[in-house]
Image 1 (cartoon, rainbow over the protein chains, first blue to last red):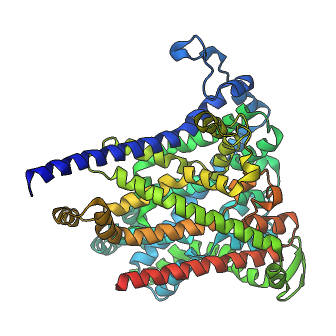
Image 2: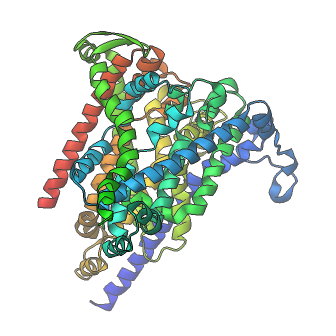
Image 3: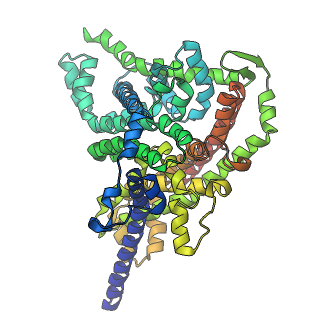
Length: 292
Length: 293
């Protein structure tokens, strides 16, 4: 290659890098603006909401009228609208569902990955087939089943159907296959360690990244679930945040500050949890798609 | 020796919770759903048999076709707009000399964590006439009509915009993971051969990310066809003016839980399953052909 074309390549490389930066920065700004706007809206009085797209302008630091910001929306959210109760409901529902689902799926995935037994192929096929069942198909008949079992309007009716997702069993089967060496299990068995003990002592720690990812995924899914609680629950006091916030919209449809404060209060806990478990989450998310 | 009986039962013991829940809450409803789709029900308790009637009625039901068309349009829009953008962002973020990658990736990914209900809440206000940020920005930038009623006129495009905001980062993360599969040797070889960016993308990157890409496309189609919460909340529980926001799952919900006909809702569920099944089969056979080639 000649020097001239080298220089051209370098220039093309620099232009390419610049284009990449522009693209990524524009995307980041567009993604971030609604969040910034949401936070501003939650702390603005409704009068200021109409006057300023972001923070009210004034004499304060950075040209913002900080003293015009208010916590009123959060106060009325917790005092009048009863969001505290819904927050607690969501917390309990999501934690219980996430822990049980992780346990059930990890045990099932381990059995399918490393235990020999007649019927293993059949169960594996059932799991694979179940992964592709579209969930809306089960809404109407599932409601009827819950009605027959007397589980309508109960948390059991919401939690039980959610703790054995076939996709979870599949994920844990993959995780066990790729990170639990056979020799280690053999050794544990030689030491006359029962299967259940082997699972908790040997397997569980080894698939720990998947445990964290799956816990978070299930917690998020339950926290954000809207359709199932809407169908299963009837008592307003039992409703989780997602349903409650959506209902606020019909009651306080002009109180934008209140609605945005409610939304902010609902996504903050999840954001905090994500920051804690971030690394594992992306691993878990992509492990279904990218094989070995 | 003492271990033998224990390990014979151990697998079943470990699978028992999954199998029990699966039997009661997946297999049983799935089986009853077949029966249910041949009945007209009045709430969960009472019903009468109508045979193929539900499906005949569904076929002649203009609302069903409307819902199918809306959902299809939304799906096509989502796939055609979102996935190329996700791919482009992944390619940009994958540039070896780009700095601050972790930060950018986290921000772009973050809306995924926001539940669709809360995304709908945010966009309810963003799409608002006069006070909504979207019209304000468009008004300031290109003099767009400040009173433009997004959710009355352009329901499906609005849904596509909100979905784009929420999920562009999700698909980007998949593509990023796939780009790690592109071997540096191949890339360098192509560079030495003097291949330009486009032909490098076409001949080196695409073959390497093909499995993940088809997976992402299928996932996007399956997800889009199950659209419910976003329009349900944006349109205040209605299907919008002239049913412009009616989706298949929304129609299923309306017939099953507002009209109380779980039978007809089940028929809609099977129609949806059929459509998704077709996509899955098409994707699978394309994938197989790709592998053979």
